[in-house]
Amino acid sequence: MIGNRTLAVPGPTNVPNRISQSMYIPTEDHRAPDLPSFVTPLMEDLKKVFKTETGSVVVFPGTGTGGWQAGLENLLFEGDRVLVSQFGQFSKLWVQMCQDMKFAVHDISVEWGEATPLDRYREVLESDTSKMIKAVMVCQNETATGVTSDVGLVRKLLDELDHPALLMVDGISSIGCIEYRHDEWRVDVAIAGSQKGFMMPTGLVIVALSERVVNIIKGGKWQSKMKYYDFGTMISSNETGYFPYTPAMTLMRGLRTGTDILLEEGMENVWARHRRLANGVRAAVDAWGMELAAKDPTTASDTVSSIKVDRQIDANDVILHAYNEYGISLGAGLGPLNGNVFRIGHLGWLNETMVLGVIGGVELTLRDLGVPFKPGSGVGAAIESYTSADPKVVQLILS
Image (cartoon, rainbow, N blue to C red; front, side):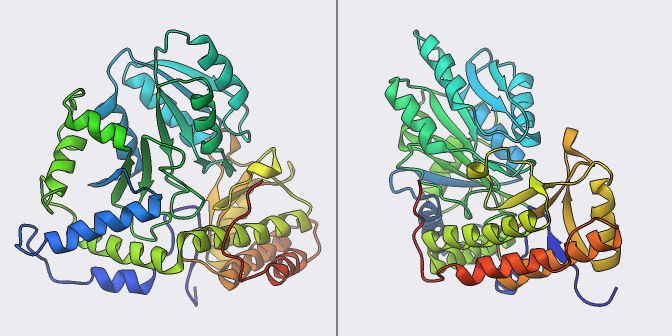
């Protein structure tokens, strides 16, 4: 095809030239005397992305799945009770990992398209009078369904019940895009990936730990069953400005630049931009006469929209046609949503005109496939949304 392909999946996301150029460097010595002057400031600045001053951030080679494993195996033992909910493909996989690790899993399954069921979490936690549940897990942003859960309300629930369980958050498709406040919500473990909000290639898992967890690890109360993802070893090595084994230095250079880009924009501005871009996509979906998989509009994700199609058409045909004819990569429906939805990712290195191009490409595809809608309606609705929004707003007002 002529022209560039358009990446509109919910990760991996677009990599800015600035990040690509920062990784285009000769191989460097990971034991060099001046490496701490690079590592130490980076770890401190990563804490700003997570909104933590009291916690610590560690970075491992790997993906978000590795981050899940690290959090679980560093802090929990076989037989430990955990509370978790599945309401989409990725929350489902987290549950399966817990089961594979032989934890006593209290799995609250709800219909895909819903968010973390706070009322049912309350029931389980209230009944746990002996405080045997060791960890409560929240998938902040379910990428398969385009649904965001309120981590702050889960923390409020734990506080109200005076429950000491660890709060663990999957923030892979939210951190660096959607509001996340590690210290304020007193999250113990939060997992992010380099290929989403940090705008980098896949290959790094970034984990934020609470002061409580760091103290537990340093106090030797928990001993990791693994070496590669050992929080304690990584923390102690990072404190010297180095790593316990050969780090992915090329990616670490990219992470430095990605972090700079986020902090230069300002995290509140980053969150507001993602809300603004998402509102435009939602306006387009409404104009097409379609619906989101998210059952409650207030939980619709600001990073990915999972869009339901009419039963007379297969969503995979939309994805295939958009890719082959117009060079647009849309996200497929996962699990039971396969063939029923296509997904538009609107996260990372992205602005209004880039999103409008995707919406226009989807309209071309729907038109070719004979889907009834008014051509230009989605693009027009998104433009109306973007031009009516105040670009100077830098702080989200949350209800």
